[in-house]
Image (tube, rainbow, N blue to C red):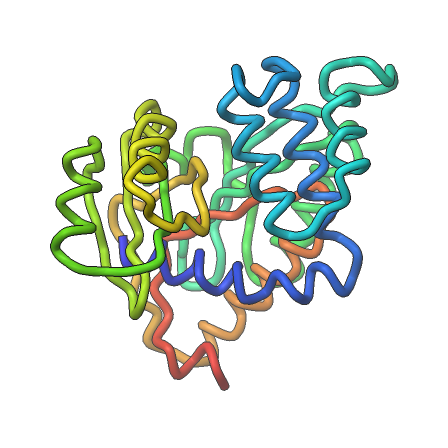
Length: 243
C-alpha cells in the first residue's frame, strides 16, 4: 500500500494549487452533492459527514456547503450530480482509476479521455482496471507508536502504516465509520478519512522520463473540475518527485 499512500500524500500537497486555480471548492461541492443524495442529514449519512469534514478542512464557506447539500438532495432542482468511475492506463502501463462527479457526462468523459490521450495514456473498458484495486477505508492520524497501532487494530482496522509523524490506517470499506468514530473517541487527531481504492500490487517506476510523463498526466486529470479523486498503482521514487 506504500505507493498508494505516497500518491495520497502528493495529492494533499497539491491542494494549495487547486485552491489557487479555484477548482477545489467545485470538487468538494460536487462530492457533497453526490453524498447528499443518500440523505441531507450528516448525522445519519456517514458519506455526507466525510464530504463535509473535507470541505471544512479546506475552509470551504458554510454557505457553499449548504448549497451543495441542497443541490444534491434535490432542493435546488436542475441536473443531478452523478458519480462515475473511469478506468485507464498511463505511461509505463500504470493503472489509474478516476472518480468523477458530474452533471454532464457528455462534457466530462471527453475531457478525461483527452487528458489521457495527450499524455501517453488511454481510457480502458469498464472493469479492465478496477479489478487491480480493493475498495478500502483510509484514515490518517497524527502520531505513531505501538499504542496507536493497537488502538486502531482493536477498533477494527486491517492495517496500520507509519509515515514520518503520522499513521495511515486502512479498514474494510464498510468499517470506516466505526473505526473512525472509535479513534475519535480515543482522542486521536484524525486529519483525513475517506473511502479509497488501494492497488493489489504496485508498479515501481525506475525511469525518470516515464515518471515525468505519469505526473504530467495526473496533473492534467486532476485539473478537470469534475474529477473528485484519482487512484493509482505506481510507486515513484522520491527523487523523481522533486526534480
